[in-house]
Length: 156
Length: 156
DNA sequence: ATTGAAAGACCTTGGCG
DNA sequence: CGCCAAGGTCTTTCAAT
Image 1 (tube, rainbow over the protein chains, first blue to last red):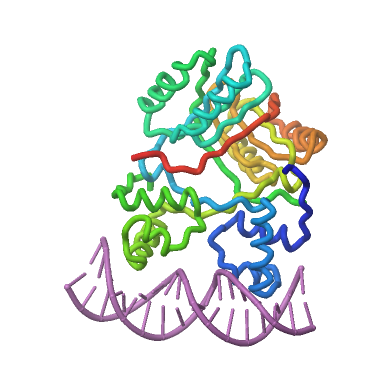
Image 2: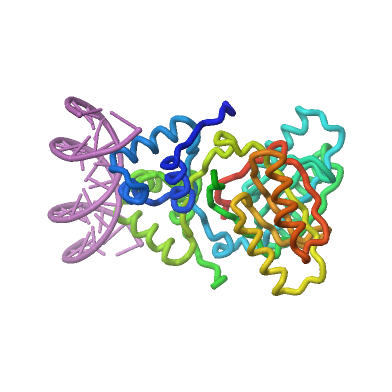
């Protein structure tokens, strides 16, 4: 499944365009990469079928709808039993306030990016989810002053 | 600009659907939320105009195209002069390998999520970008074993 | 792999409840 | 606000190259 699919310059261009704006029409992409609409359509279908192009997601301005606080949680876990850890990671990753979960090496075991309404909301998540599980040894919280997310393809 | 826009149940439903799959057709969304296509189209246009719906981005399987290594960098900065820091954050956020940058309180000042080809690539970024700037006091690197990103709307 | 043509589906607007 | 209807545009398929 992790087999390296080879992309030619046209595939890369298509992916780059769609990564920037998934709402581009097929006609627009075709024009941008210098292909007929039908050929471009084939390319996109193939990229989807090969599992390179996974889907598309709208970007919502969470701040504008009342989610004004973002935080990063550094979680240290106890006795790393694979199954228990995986369960906890899974349940964490599906909390609606959670945007990203990283299982990492180093000082912390889990890094969790959350977007919440306010401090009270943040406190609730930490105490009701993280401090409730025995796997969790300690949670360190950092407030996010500014966060930037990039939607670009890395260069070949 | 950070004024809370109020969303009714229908707007929320639309955002939730598009967050999950930005390639849903207007007709599909309309059916799902129980509106006529034209009404649904109006809603989406309004959400865009109000700055709630910012855009859409395709999700690419980076692993499948040779970007097999992900890491989180914890960066400590020196003397926090706003201008210098902002410049560095900006230049960091636009590196093609960088997916997310968080400016945070706490032990680190910057948390950077990068996706790279391999260890050599990672080393190159750290030594050529981070260790080149005087603002950077220290970089701690964590390898990402597993990362999950969620594309859902938080509940009202 | 790429193309053009054709059919059908969809988006999009404007006028009206 | 929401709906219907109509025109214009785009997607999607397919046979041919």
